[in-house]
Length: 335
Image (cartoon, rainbow, N blue to C red; front, top):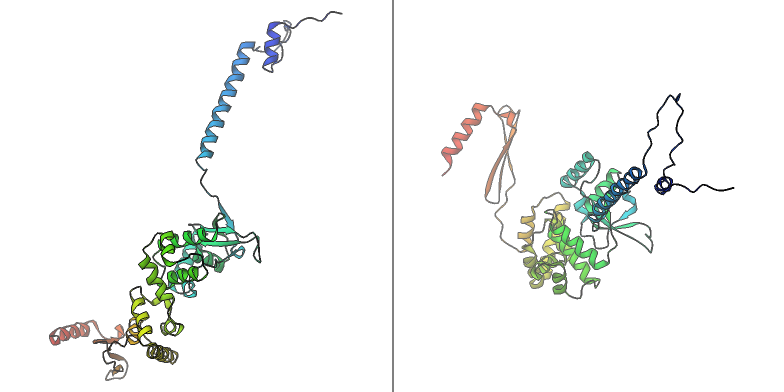
């Protein structure tokens, strides 16, 4: 039995996955089928391939633009631990500024600016993450009990230190003591061979590193004389270090007296503590005087401190007319 050889038309249709043309319909056929020609089907197939190729190229170009990007992950804060190089003092996680940060994060549904972490591959915390930068944002999310948005990248200790320092120096809330403590720890643990090399690596003048390091290296008694070591200003470091070198026993004794007085309820400003430690003469401080109203219903406090006079009273205790008279009398009495 002979087999009929396919026609050129049928072979073209088969090449593009089309079925051969159906046999002619009878006259009473109720529907008409439009038949594709071989060349037409081939052109349609090629057009589809061209569209798919263009889409692939577009997606490849878009993907290439993300080559250097790091994805942001949502991580539970308990899966993240502070870095051993953390430069945040405990006082950075309390107070009005930190509460404002927490409120901002809570209102935004998370930390809008991601922190950065590195995976821990061995040891006690294997499988968790270590903060590279963003300790306050991490702590805020931990306190709030919400996930942390974080960039994840593997970096070595020196790379972590440099990134943390660079990111924190761009923030206005980092204090001299915190910065100095970070530098002190890095040098004591041998992360950098010298203060000069540390300064070169992080790109800051060695004098800046030295001043911060001086503050963090002050004796514990001197640091404790302040309400918080975060109150110590950059320019005070050299003076306080000089006082310790020149008269260590006297300076430590003064610091202990300040700490004892504070424990008994006395208050000191950071400037007052600094002046006392350096034995800078202070203006006489007299106890406040209480001025009572004639009818005894209200009172005012009259204080002389640091060469200034302060009068305090409740605004509601004096009428607007009397307040104007007081202002006028003060203006008349001032030299």
